[in-house]
Length: 76
Ligand code: SF4
Image 1 (cartoon, rainbow, N blue to C red):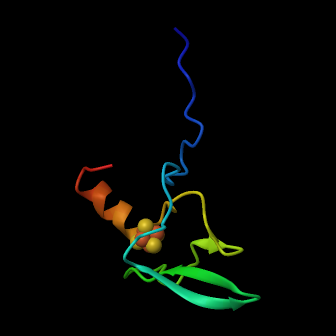
Image 2 (image 1 turned 60 degrees about the horizontal axis):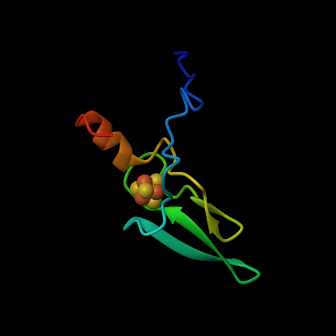
């Protein structure tokens, strides 16, 4: 049986979910009736946007502090 290549090898983002509903989301008015959603979790990327054009990105970024904490604890 042929082994399949990992498509997202090296990226590390979680493509099975989004940041929607996370307790660390803050929203601000981006004008034109749209909202920007930002990650307010402690860490070097605090304030990064996790949405575009009023919609959440279709993945959880690889730099997510929660995912990094889970990786350290051996969880996925
Ligand atoms: S990046 Fe992680 S901590 Fe930040 S909003 Fe998304 S799921 Fe929450």
